[in-house]
Image (cartoon, rainbow, N blue to C red):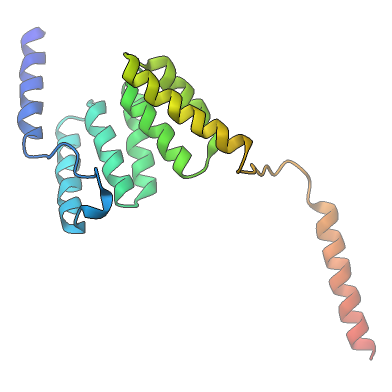
Length: 171
């Protein structure tokens, strides 16, 4: 079993050699063609190694830089599902929800990332993210929930339209 793991690991490393580590340090400096090629390489690597949470996390980040949010969310959620203890997948999933301003979900994901932190640097990143999410929740973002029935406002709107129409028809 160990020999198979080493063989798979070396095959994965060989596959990743053609992929640059972080082309999105400055997302505006990456040419769309270069990003498209990078995404294609990552997609191929994910097909070759479907159980790699690292590859799925990188793919989710690349999709996010390419403004393909649904694919990014799918890739990051599958990375978290593949390895629930993967810190970076959890942190990037929380970051995506934060950027989409789905703050209650982002807070839950960031709390999981804090729990998964493996060293001080991880912990500081996750805590800063959680702190920013909570600040936005508290200060600047209003979370709208649709938990009240809209029957009465809808009936009042229809009644006003009928009254206006009747008033115009009467003249």
